[in-house]
Image (tube, rainbow, N blue to C red; front, side, top):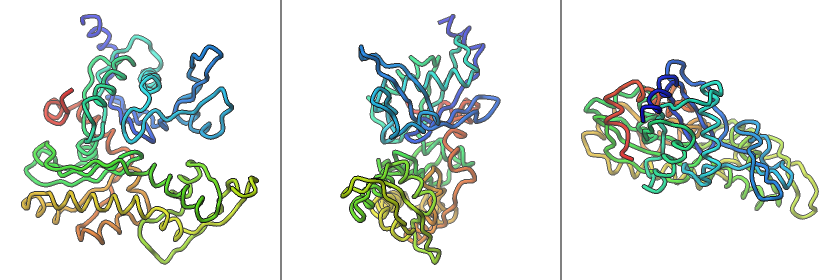
Length: 345
């Protein structure tokens, strides 16, 4: 115990947004030190042992391109840990990298987790962080962290509504007096949009594309609500009939059609959360509007669609991709938030 405290004196505390698509790390006193894809490349030897070859961007570049002995793994699925050992390796890498690879570091760590996390999933996050070298672990629900990071007055007796569309989960919450009044967490977000696009191209054009290609299409010409600007882009994949590479053009209208189901599920979740909101807080939300954060907030016209459905003002946060980790970082600095905003382990 004393040894841990001594090591803690030499390490800066960290806040981590352990996302399905990306992991962001905030170092106390320095701000966000890096954001990397949540991907780990491992190589298996003849005895079945695995060694980590790359973590982050270098590993993501290997997705779908590795030989048989190397696997590029995304250890987070739907916002929670799918592969315990690989997550542990990834966390250790990020903690050491944040501290310039000093081995004897035992930082306090605040980690953002989905609001619908189960006790088993909570324990998996805690144990991964402990094994990776954390001294004390605090978990904060992602909508709460995102609201703090977006600068909402969560300590006031007023309704704040946040919609966080990430890679694995969409979190919708109404927050007041440092607590969550009502929330919904669904495992439909950016990844499901990519999968829907892969299936659409496969069904319509008999063309196989990878999820990385689908993500690029979504980010380049994807749109959630019709507009006059119908763009198109070239897509490369493998023809399912002939088995040879093929190129075709896809339009933003087709992409919107492909993304319709996951987007409608997200919109319906926002509507249901509004229906469950107490009238006084609903009145605050009508005045202040809804804040959009997460990578999904950057999908073109997502705010327009939500405004159309809810008739409530929609604002995209200044830095939607960093809101969760910035909020978790502020929790580190505020003892009151650390007591009230974190969830029991």
